[in-house]
Image (tube, rainbow, N blue to C red; front, side, top):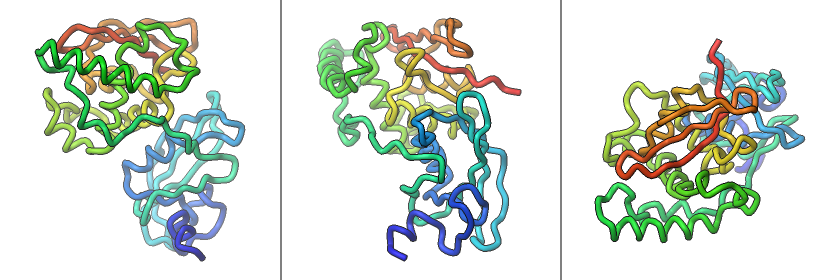
Length: 264
């Protein structure tokens, strides 16, 4: 077994990879579970939704394994097992799935160079606009067709999301002007939303909407980027809403779309 095999699968695992609790998908942490699942597609390129059902102990692994129900097009298609105590996060997909390895071409390492939109300084604001225009050039061509209202500050939101994923919730909160995220916000769902923005450029339209968030979680995600919900509107698409948000410091507007998770 090669070193890559040891990283991609749990030592001592047996059974169908990912589909059996005895051979779970290894990730490097509980947060990495979301990172992995947010990159997972069905073999025919359909997106998925997931819901954590709990955890169990796998004797042959000697560690706790998390259990996720996987849905596509509103139908449960699989139950996957993930162990968040691996040496690293697996780059292998279970049978019937594949991993989306084409991440955005944004330079994630440049978030510290981003001028602050929160500065009450006209010169800083124009520096931010120049920076945002450069980032927007890297957005995939198929997303540029949307209106300026939808895309006006998407580069800014992207970098906020990338910063959150890189720094982690605790450090991000210490450095954030408003101390976001708040303690009662669901960190796992914030990570999921940020992964969808960074790796899938979601949120710009009903066709490219965010997924797997309740209405409150959708609002919390955008508020973490300093955009407060003004109005949540229903659309003609089932369970998809359009959120209208204003920036907390300068009242700039952005519109984002999300397929709302209906809680049972």
